[in-house]
Amino acid sequence: MASPSGRGFIPMRMRQSISQFELAFEQETALERRRREQLRRRAANRSRARRIARTEQRGKVRFSVLVLWLTLTVVTVVVVMFETLAWLMA
Image 1 (cartoon, rainbow, N blue to C red):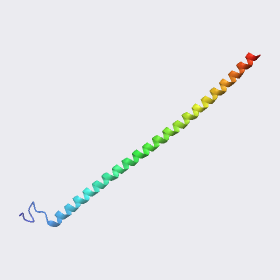
Image 2: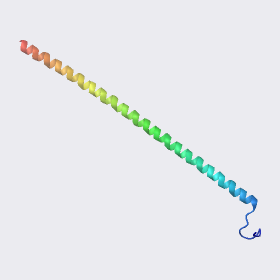
Image 3: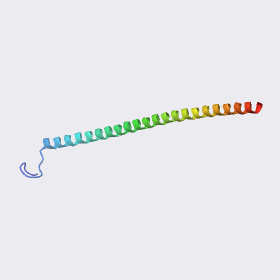
């Protein structure tokens, strides 16, 4: 056994303190890892929700434009059809 003043001797109290420090460090590291993973998942969920909202908004705009063009097409065809009918009947 080495002497207390020599190298290689670690008092029992210090050994326990180091063990406690290592255990606390491991626990803190695991907790930090879980926090980072949770934050990453939350960010991914927010990003997915934003992407879905943008897609839905674009879909609504595209549908509105489609309805507008179909309405204009129907009105144009009806007007031209009746004008042609009136011209033929005259």
